[in-house]
Length: 180
Image: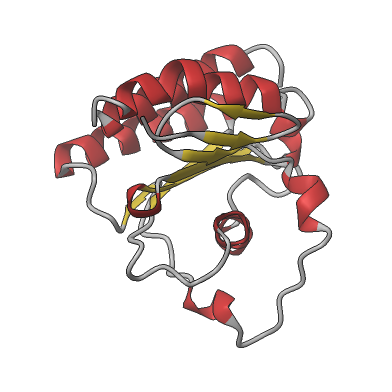
């Protein structure tokens, strides 16, 4: 049996992916990026779903895109899903890579910061959900960890990545309704 590791305010061992739900606010103050560094190699977004690892079919990408687009129109919450190919992603710690990408892409409307960034790399067995400051204020790291443990991981254990991400997004949005 492989181990899952979740880092938030607590660490939990559950399965076969290394997971991190981290308070982006506390970590981001410690990071500095200089012009012309590794962040320059972060690709430009191609849409809500950026599957550089090819884990989703074209239909699954289109379905997730429609779901995320309708969520943004109804709630102003912006969601980005990035599936990193371990052979082409910048050689940086997974948290730093996802945080820098979310910042570069501007996930979450300025002023509201209602952004959710989901970074996945099956090749290194990691997934990270980063919530913008506006989401963090009403949705805890523990709640995000529960979404991973109870909703996303059961599907991932069956190699049903689309179903896991879709179910996780829908659960988070359902739980966020009325809080923002």
